[in-house]
Image 1 (cartoon, one colour):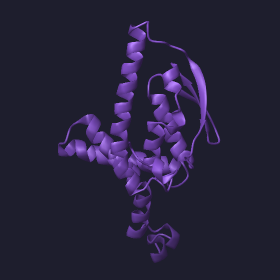
Image 2: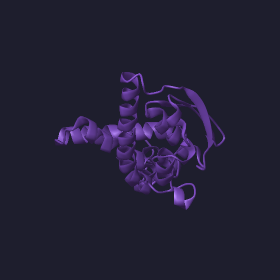
Image 3: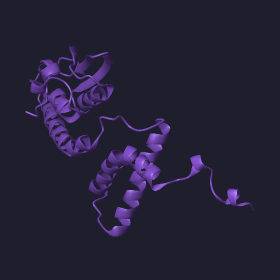
Image 4: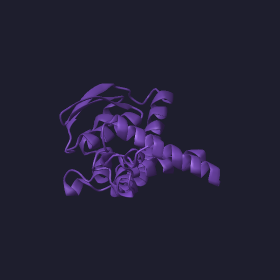
Length: 189
């Protein structure tokens, strides 16, 4: 065997630098997935933490591979740090919407008047618009039907669900998370 056969080709060598670049591309997603693992398993012994870390890195790498590169550049460390608060506030909005729908189902005196409303969003990126569409759909009583450019079409269960959804809490929360839109609209409350 020749010496040249024992060493990989120059383009094939895996260096610490290339590994660091690869992890930098998938790191934020891996951290979010690992955090979700800890929250949902509620186990903190070393075997579960190690398994969670391995799974988080594998899923982040697979996602990066299937998407043909890194994740959206806006999903940086700041996004990863803001995401848990965004998730908690979204969870609270979901609880409030569930309570409203429950009251409407149990009390026939409360109106149910389905309608489709539309509004123009000030969010610029597809990432932010997708997050907003999913947040709207997750809250009971509303479903995002379509996004056409920056125009959202939403099905609402009742008339008061349709009151000015474009300036609503979910869009402000998404603008805060993604750091998009007018500065005065990037506030949580």
